[in-house]
Image (cartoon, rainbow, N blue to C red):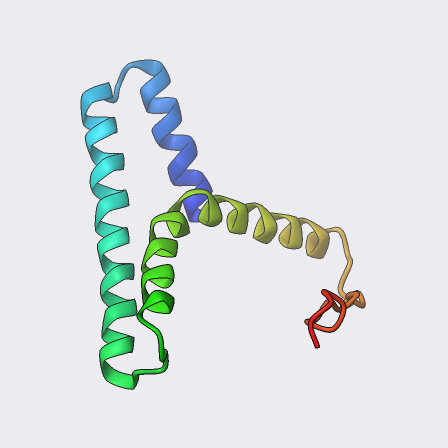
Length: 109
């Protein structure tokens, strides 16, 4: 919820001219770069520590996903959380059954 308030505040400040556009762009770039470096460091530290992947291509794939983690996945995740919160506040307190999709349904044997 705080993330939405923060995003709305930044957008409102930019719209009203209170926030410098140059500062806004620099802030977004720094935030994205910092979060991406933290994610890449986490992936590499996990690989150095536990060596779970036999092929270096798997590690490269994980590192490449670090660039997509903060945009658009984070925003999608925020939308899903808000949908769940809205359903809960409306009184929907039960888990709905999910149709499972596994490797067998994708044609893998």
